[in-house]
Structure formats: structure tokens, C-alpha cells
Length: 133
Figure 1 (cartoon, helix red, strand yellow):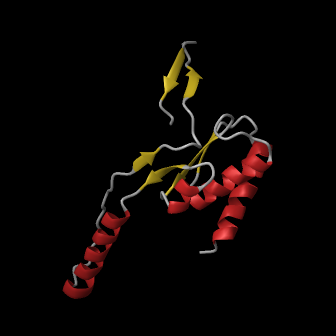
Figure 2 (cartoon, one colour; figure 1 turned 180 degrees about the horizontal axis):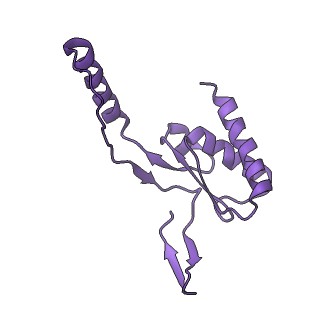
Figure 3 (tube, helix red, strand yellow; figure 1 turned 120 degrees about the horizontal axis):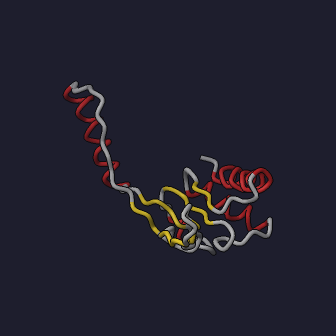
């Protein structure tokens, strides 16, 4: 994994996003490194995070919390994922128990400083607060 290039892709994506969709107020990224790049790219463009654009990552890597602007992210239970993956691999390798199984894990939203609460105007014209973090 080339960490600098993933962050660079996020910076580039933030520029393209603002050029094509200047009205966007939130970005969800497939991983935290990409999200950190998006935050850096927005900062370079003078866009305030989270006041103007909220950013959410995925993975809850250590760097997400240690960033100067701690990243809101989705935490996945890595130890549990590893345990289940190991057991599935052992079942197949040692017991020949090959089969496709769907295993669901409960992710957790970790709200930090790259998101804000959003107030949206509903179709009925009233103002409603949503818990966007």
C-alpha cells in the first residue's frame, strides 16, 4: 500500500469534486487515508472542514485520530474480522468445508471533528436537524 499516493488521490478528488459539484456539503470515503487526503485538499482550496464540507472515512486507523483535525470515521471490528476470517480459512484448509458464507459485522460511527450537525429544509418547508455528527 502506497500511503502517500492514496492521500494524493484524495487531494485530487477534492479538487475535482469542488469543480464539478461546488454545492456538495458532505463526502464519504472508502477508507481513512483517502478521507485524510480529501480533508487536506479541501484545506488547500480554502474550504473549511466541517463548516462547509463534512468528511467521513472508513477503517478508524490510528492516523485518523492523530490528524490535526481528527477524522470522523466508521470503525469496523478488526479483531473480530480476523478471528472469523481465520476460522473460515481453517475450516476450508483442514476440514475441506468449502462454502460461501455471509458474515455481517456491526460497524460503529466514530464522530470526531470533520463532521458537523446538518440542518436541512424538508419538503414541507420546516427545518429539521439530523444527527450527522
